[in-house]
Every structure is written in C-alpha cells, then in structure tokens.
Length: 338
Image 1 (spheres, helix red, strand yellow):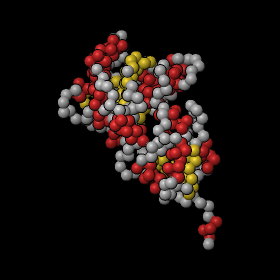
Image 2 (cartoon, rainbow, N blue to C red; image 1 turned 90 degrees about the vertical axis):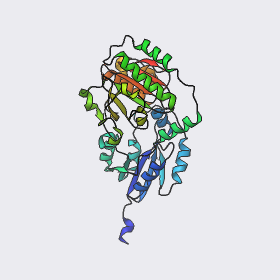
Image 3 (cartoon, rainbow, N blue to C red; image 1 turned 60 degrees about the vertical axis):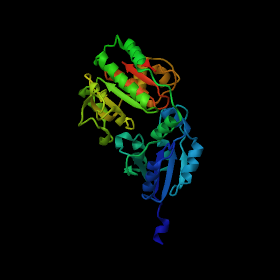
Image 4 (cartoon, helix red, strand yellow; image 1 turned 90 degrees about the horizontal axis):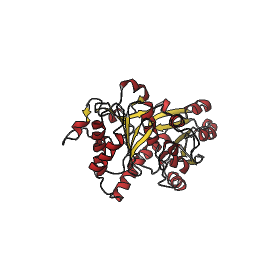
C-alpha cells in the first residue's frame, strides 16, 4: 500500500543501435534491472551521418525494433541537427530527467560528455553494464557484411608503394622513408586480404605524448608486452600481426624505428576544429572539406590528420571501413590517398 506513491526509478540508455547486436541486448537487460522504467535515447540519422558518414537503418526502423524488445518501455529519438556540433544526448537527458544513465563497455567518467548534465539533474551514471564478452560492435558487423558482398579488385602493392615513395620523398618526419614504405606495404597487403575494416596508425610515436592516451581495454593492447618491429611483420608466421588488431578500438602506436609499442589506444584532447582553423582558416561546409578531403569522412580520419599536426614529426596512416580508402598524413595535411 505504501509503495503505490513511490516515484518510479527511470533508467536511460543511449546509442545508435545501427544495427542492433547481442551487446545491445545484454546492455538493455542489465539496465532494466536497475529501475522501473527503461527509456532508450536513440541517436537520429543526423548523428549517424556525422559520426559514421552513413546510415544503415533509418531511425524510425531502429525505433520500431527497439520498442519490440522486452524490457524497453519508451524510445526517444534524439533531436540532433544536420552536422551537429554537440554529439551528446544532454538535451534529451534534461527533458527526461532520469535517475540513472547507463553506459556500456569500458568507459570512464571523463569519456562521457553528458556527465555535467547528469550532475545538474541529479542523475547517477553507471558503467560497465551489459558485460558478457568481447561484443561485436555495429560498425564491425556492417564491415563484415559489406566485405561479404564486395569482392574488390586487388591493389597493385608495388605500384602503390612506388607512388607513396614519390609522395614522401621530401618528407622530414622522424621515421625513415624505408620504414614508412614498409608500413605502407603491410597495410596494403592487409587490405588485399581483408576489406571493410578501419585502421589508425601513428608512426614516430614518442613517450612524451603519452598524456594524450588512454587504454579503455587492456586486452586490446597486445603489443605492450610483446613488442614487434615492422620489419619482422613481413616474415611468415610472425605472431601479433596487424590483422590481430583490426577489430580493436583506437590507434596503433609505432616508434620512429618501426617498433610497435601499443594497440587499441584512444587518443584524447586533439580538438580537430581548432587545428583545422590554424591550418586552413576560412569558411567551409564541414571539417572534412576544411582538412582537404574530397568528401565527408569518418571522425577517425579527422582525429588522424589532427594527430599528425599535434604530434610533430609523425606520419599517420588510416584505412576507412566505409569505402576502403587509404590515407597518409603529415603535419596536418594529406600527403597521399588511395
């Protein structure tokens, strides 16, 4: 009788769910146990286009699927505008005013842009919900699906490396030209064996920049205890090949001599907009155009080209899981693209 007037505990989970996978289901099940009403804030299509450059499933379809899942009481679509500057769901949290905001994975409070809003409305943030293994993230699932549909023409590695040599012949970064070309060849070989994956590699890393890094999942840092040199990776049967890291989050760090130091590293505090304004001041449609990309690119590439400017003397390599593009950056500029 006395519990009838008790205020229900509202729990919120947010995400794109594009597409939904087993990790999402486990997260939803665990979040529901924490309160009486479970609300999902669904990142809209504008958010997805800005974050991943593409939408696999329309927001209304994603909403309908989520509403059909047992335990979900309400689904609220976010109100992100086209090319949103604020990618958080703070506005939605302010409107809903939940008691608990649940975050999955290995995030920390500094990784949650909504932390200030939660503090303002008295909402507790709970981490590490939905554990149960190394979840297959949505982008990884899509990459595998795309790879199963497409059989792309093989890259001519010798010709491509020759073009990269030409593009880098006047380079003054820390690593030698041979080390850069060795890494290029390794990445291109991986692209021929496996398509639709993302890669972010910083060559020329120095310990003085470690304050910019975080390791959200120590299991992904396979090179921490097993340092491998690039020249050894070209040998058959060598353990800890780059393929082992393709489904990891974050960057691979390599020193100027080609020794791989870490993998699965999150690079923080880069501020691409600030760097873009320094290098290319003026008015542009978006950051992709301002940095000189031909079209809109994934945030990974914006972070990578920014990293090449902040970490002076480095050469940064990326592969796009969306379109299999390959880029090399130095000093905040695109020096080669495929």
